[in-house]
Amino acid sequence: MFNAVIDAPFGKVGIRLEGEAVREIVYLPESTRNVEPDAPLARLAAEQIERYFERASTTFELPLADVGTAFQRRVWQAINEIPPGVVLTYGQLAKQVGSVPRAVGQACGSNFFPIVIPCHRVVSTSGIGGFAHHGGDGFFRNVKRWLLAHERLPYA
Image 1 (cartoon, rainbow, N blue to C red):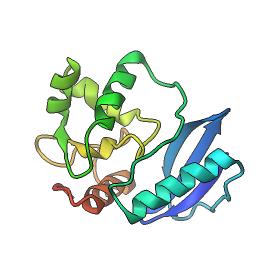
Image 2: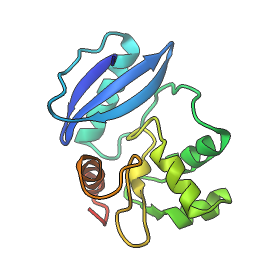
Image 3: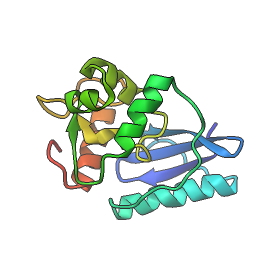
């Protein structure tokens, strides 16, 4: 159950709340039915995500649920500091957080707040890399390609 499902250029985006925080943002296929925001926070999240679709430089001001491990949160914080128009490799981000590329990739794939925490800005040294724990081509890789192209980043 989502508190809102909105249209996206690549399908739909679902928003889940938990109390007074955004609990999860999920990429969904076009066939998913829209859900009008059922709470002020769901409406705010939907508006900010829609604004991002219009202008890639949009910043987000949303309360996010305290989820993930301490390591994941450290990686997500580092991802959050990557500005629009910049990509880092998993290896570059791993050096920043004192880890290894595979662990950073796993943390990226476990991101509960894609778009808001822009894990699409982290790529492989040999190309686009995976997305949301999905390798190969398909829906999630196409979402990543769209997000990178929207920000006019290489690899799209």
